[in-house]
Length: 326
Ligand code: F6P
Image (cartoon, rainbow, N blue to C red; front, side, top):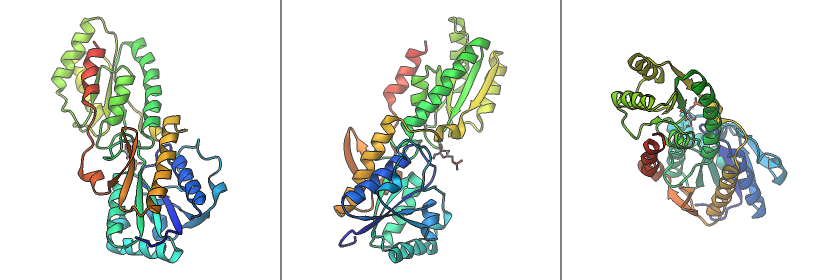
C-alpha cells in the first residue's frame, strides 16, 4: 500500500451500466473534497495500459449524474489476463503518479484487478457496476435497478399486444450467468413463469401449467427468460411450446436496451454512496477489496470472494411467482 495517498485514478470496465457516471462523479468529488488529485482513465484497462489519462477537477463531472453509459468509456481488455499487459498497466500508473485506483465494473473486471493487486503495492478498490447484479458482497450492483425498470416498461407494453392476440410471449432479458434481472422483472411484470440458470426448468411441466392456466380462462401469458439459461436458444423453447400447445408464441429479446438510459434514483444514490466509500476506503489504507452495500451497511469484501462465492437469488421471490400467476 502507498504510504501516503496523493493521486487516485478512476476507470470503468466491462459492460457499462446506468449509474456508472454517478459513481465517477462521487469518486471525483470525494477525492477533491479530501484534497486528492484525481485522474480519469479512458476506455477501461485498455486505456490504462496505453496511458489514456485525463486530469479531473470538481467541474469535470458536472451534469453527468443523470446520464447513462460512462463518460470514461469502457472496454473488455484481454491484455489484462497476460503478465506483460499488467506490467504495462502498473508502469503507466506509476509514471503518472497514481497511488490508488477505483475500478468500476463487474466480476471479469475484478479478476483483472486482483491479478494487478498481486503484482504491485498500489491501492485498488472495486465498485460493483453491472446490470446483472451477480456480484457477491453487495445486495445490489449499480445499474441493476434501472435495467429492471427498463425491462419492466417493455414487458408492460408487450402485455398489451400479448393479450390483444392471445399469445404466449417469451421475453428474454439480460443476465449472462444469472437470473436476478429475470426474477425481479418476472415478479414485477406479473409473468406466468421465469426461466433462469439458478433453477432447472422442465419444459413439459411448463407446457402443462400453461395449458392449465388457459383452461382457467387466461388468454395470454408472459414467460421471462434470462439470457444465460439451460436451453440453447429462447426461440427453440418458444417453437416447442407453440408446437405442443397450438397457441401462437413470440419471442422478444430486450438486449442492450436494458443497459442504456438515465439511472433511477436508487442507482444514483447507490453509486454516490459506493463512490464515496471507495475513495474513503483507499484513504484509510484499504486495498484489494470491493465496496458494497449489504442490508443497508457499507461493507468491503476481498476481491476474490466476488467470483469465488456465489450470490444467491431470493428463494422467496421464486415461491411467490406460481401463487401470483394462478
Ligand atoms: O454483464 C453485463 C451484460 O450486459 C450481460 O448481461 C450480457 O450478457 C453482456 O453484458 C453483454 O455483453 P456485450 O456488451 O459485450 O454484448
